[in-house]
Image 1 (cartoon, rainbow, N blue to C red):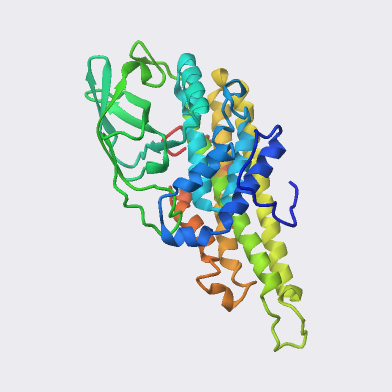
Image 2 (cartoon, one colour):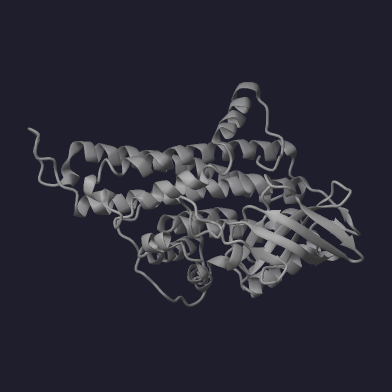
Length: 410
């Protein structure tokens, strides 16, 4: 990993797509720098991030995973995850939106038939679709009623990240009288989808993650992901959506932690005063031994956490090289490492979000400084599912050699 001593120049427009993974990450850093300028003010206002999503589109980041033949970046998940990390350093809410978008844009590859994959990726890339998802497994499944050649989705979800800023929404439900789950991609802007606008949480405030009511969304049977002649054709690969989103979470937390450390370091260099009541008197806060020790400790832990996330990404890339023949053992081992990466990212992120105040001082608690945003964002999203269960998954593997069974959260 390259250490950047100064942020990239702020850009408002871009011409053409980057040609290398490194250039894509640099593009993401430019976006993050632009987002960071008013991240605190936008967080306090809690307004729907239409402009922020448009910025992601203008920078080309939305189609990073799309096929080159259709105008996409043709990049792999390693690059996508690093981009999520970079954007999250500037604004965790927008980093989350982008990470979820990548997951749902990839959903066709995880579940769909070859024909569906080709059709979705072409339309999504050429149309610069931004994806949201109404797939909260802790709620009751949406009910699906068959009406001739159509499936009709009805129900409510208490969380729907992406909400009103998305072009399309991924729905999931169960066909009445069966145990058949169906995923489908539908246009967001339609009367049958009603967002409740009730997301007003401690952190990740601009993710449009509030509730949604689905009131008769109609989907052609042929759009049911992974179904051939109304029969689902399962793949081991289609269970990778959960470890993949968990790895997105880990990179989200690491990016937010990076933003916290960088913001605090700037404040310490510019404003933190040395403590005058000590025999070891310093001229600046940045010369204090305890300050230097703390930054060294936090930076080392963050680098270590990033290295574990990179290892997890390598396992995902290995699976992607033979998606149709991936074995359950390989899937399970990747899930364990991802669980480890997530728990370490949370621990390190929360520690950084707290200890940055130790090295900035009392005046850094001013609302205008905004150092609180980083801890609030990680604390809020890290409650997505209990981290204790992730630790136990790794523990069962380490102690008993057991791999986690695929569920909605593993």
